[in-house]
Image (cartoon, rainbow, N blue to C red; front, side, top):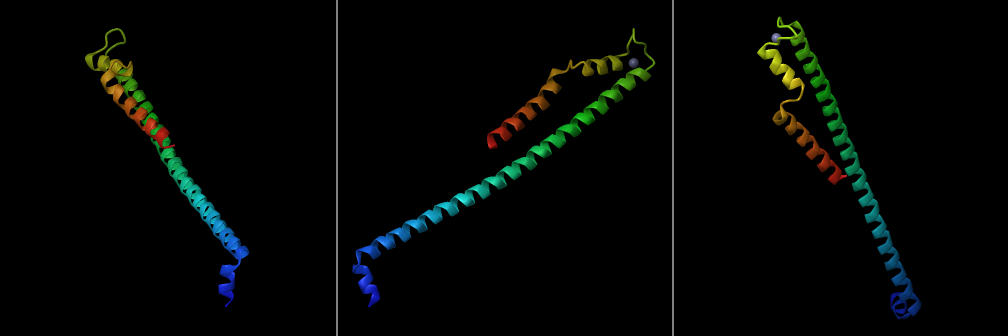
Length: 122
Ligand SMILES: [Zn+2]
């Protein structure tokens, strides 16, 4: 009985529309909260990826320095003199001087590609 009178009462129609509108607003806000949570997870993931790249790069630099000092000590300990280096020492010196562009270019390009991808994702 009460329902029938409610349907016919214009003020109840307005109240019903208002409730629908408020429900819709709640839904939109809940969606926004979900989107923010999803973004936060993405950023946390990207932070882990960046930290991992940084650690790998630091390890690579440390390894590179160790290799350089090892190569230099090989030259130091070689019997050939500074004025008349043997073939092996000469090759090592060329590598250390960076006269090997083909081998040097590829790791640089790989890192540039990785960094570009990370920036696009961020
Ligand atoms: Zn030598």
